[in-house]
Image (cartoon, rainbow, N blue to C red; front, side, top):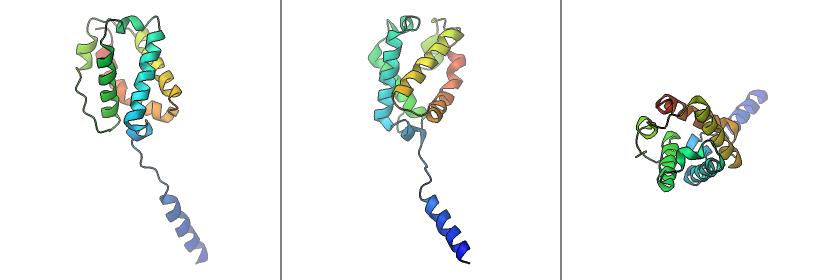
Amino acid sequence: MLRNIFMFVAISFSACYVQADTLYENLGGQAGIANIVDGFLEEISYDREIYPFFAKSNIKRVRSKLEEQFCHLSSGPCVYTGDDMKSVHTGMNIDEAHFNRVVELLQTAMTKADIDFPTQNKLLQKLAPMRADMLHR
């Protein structure tokens, strides 16, 4: 009987610590996403291979739309108002190596922002379906 009471208390106590965080919260909310995007754009600015794709872009708009997109995909309170990925990337001729390098730069930015690897993988999993819309256009 005492053992059953102890087990009940232990299970009840541990249930209080179950995390129900969303990906948005695990990314640090709006401030965390802004930090990730800023770091990502900084990584891009130093990359000789990838920077040319962004050289003539309106970086304020890119920053804003990436923040919206990451917020929306992570179940945050945002609505993505940017263009679809096919339209944005048409004429850029992005190949597998370019795409993979951009993913690496995003991972570096997230690591520098102290985002743990499981959370990084969850965001990348949300972004992955867009790959086909970006390549060879």
